[in-house]
Amino acid sequence: MLSSAPSPYPAPVGGASLLLTFKGLRNTILIIGSDVLAASRAFAALEAGMQVIILTRGLVCDELRWRADQRQVNLTDWDVLPSASTSLLASAPDTKADAESLSAFLAENPSISLVCITTHTADTPALARICHAHNVPVNVTDLPALCDFSFAATHRFVDPSTGEQSALQVGVTTNGEGCRLAGRVKREIVSALPKDVAGAVRQIGKLRRLAKNTDDEVGECEEGEDSSAATPNRPVPGWRNSAAESKDESSRRRMKWVAQVSEYWPILRLASMSEDDMKLILSGDSSQTTSSYLVQSPDESSLHNLTLFPPPKKGRILLVGSGPGHPSLLTIATHNALTKYADLVLSDKLVPAAVLALIPETVEVRIARKFPGNAEGAQSEMMDAAVEAARRGLTVVRLKQGDPVVYGRAGEEVLFFRAHGFEPLVVPGVSSALAAPIFAGIPVTQRGVAESVVVCTGVGRQGKEV
View 1: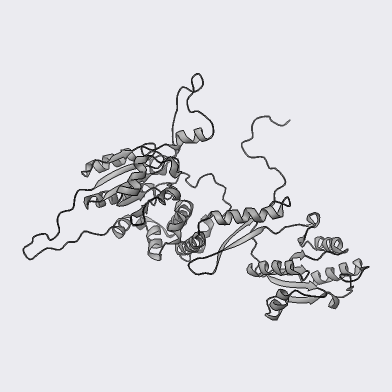
View 2: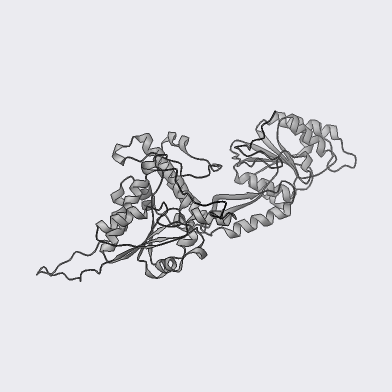
């Protein structure tokens, strides 16, 4: 007897497709047809690195003819196949002959891994059965009952900095329920993404290669694009300094840090990363992060040892909360701090790009390297940087997600800044601990139902579980 208790895992619901990104190196696609749609399928296969065979009889569209002349595709005529009939042109096709010809052709070409039929005839069902008999997946245009796979509505992004096609693609499928609508949804997604998203993918690729540093074992610790973990912030033991790291530890740490940068940094920031930025991100040297960003005050004196520059005014430090994430939910005080008063913004990685976008371009923004195992080190970097900048007379905004005193380490920072001669101004924000239940329609307190609220964390100091 099955238990009626709630399942701890989601129940599978049929009707979906298994979406895969298929790399076609050393594989061949056979396209039966020679119309414009066949040309479109051929182009998609060529971009995936596949070999393309066009099996046709009769006229060939201009694009396929041109690609054949350029030796990009291989045109094969049905009539040269053994037992071929004239079924695509005849009123009474010889279905058996064409099926036998296709079977022999597939047997002679074992590299064919996909078949796409764009031309409908009476023998199309028989051709699909032959593909199934050879265990070759087949797609038949407008006949979903015969299809093993379908083509998603896809878009490949252009890198605006180079004008070239990028590695970023998106695909949408309605699983046969609305092909035209899939194209519309695809366009909506493309238009909603930042224009620099392709550049961000390019730079993250460079960062990953730099992090791997030709170490083949690194790939074992990478998370795939299909990672379904609810959060990339699982407890991780505190990171030792780089001098104490083994080669394997260093490789794994760097790849985890790449994942964190990909997850949290604004798209524009990712797209504009230089190689020096990348090395700094992956570096285990905390002192390098602080010194490399800050411009030192001039240290020039006259011949009489009189300072040529007046002493800088004393700076100030603001600890502000950015609320649940949407710019419209910022307090006026936080908005003013970011847009009017800040000379330097030291941001936690969780602050959304939409909030960071409010900061004027003339204001320097740094994002904490609070990657797995480096939370303590990144915290120290941010506090040191705030004091250093405040001593030079700058207004430093220490930007945190939610409320700075709700698991934002604001208490630690207040004590640190006081010990270094600065009394920070703390600006509250709306904590997601309270906002998330509101958005879900759940009051956190209600007379007779919920008399108290308990907020706790699952990760303690040094990345230990609590």
